[in-house]
Image (tube, rainbow, N blue to C red; front, side, top):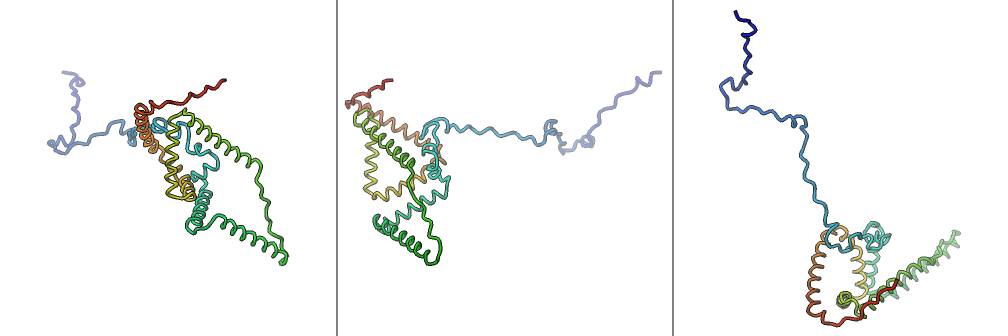
Length: 263
């Protein structure tokens, strides 16, 4: 007689209910992978955005390391032109608009305006000072206004530096040292003469004030696009200049060379 332990047969694996009932067409649910079950909130990260190469490569209208704020001189003046101090910028634009309306629209004259303003201010202050003696109140406190010496010196130095730089540029052009500067100055003066023939000096100053308060902030906002188009224009201008230099300008005798600076 055989041993009962040896006659034990392993039981077959359990058959799914759907398969045991005759193989229904309904698909069986598939268990998710172990990794997905362990981290259900795992999401594939999006590809990293490309680095802003326009800030470091290509043509830069103001230079590689020069910001708009620095190009405007920095300080309070740059803050006003870039509308970082909105109240002061609005006051400047409003004052320029009022002056332009007075002189251009109402046909006021500068000497007449200054005289009327001074008459009104002096009359009000004089009557106010006299009235305080009758009503027994203190007279108006009119501060002493003086121009500080350091402010006058700094302003004169700034004008002196600008004038000397312009005179040096004109001298270099007159000596024929730089042909590009010569052409650039001639074109700029011609454009300025055409603009001056279309409007008077006050309107030109008013337009310049508006442009100084709009163009820098627009360039600061869209610097990449402006630099892209400026680079393309600069490339085309260089190509045309090379053709002009090869055909015409190379045949023009140049002026004496610049003297080298001795150490």
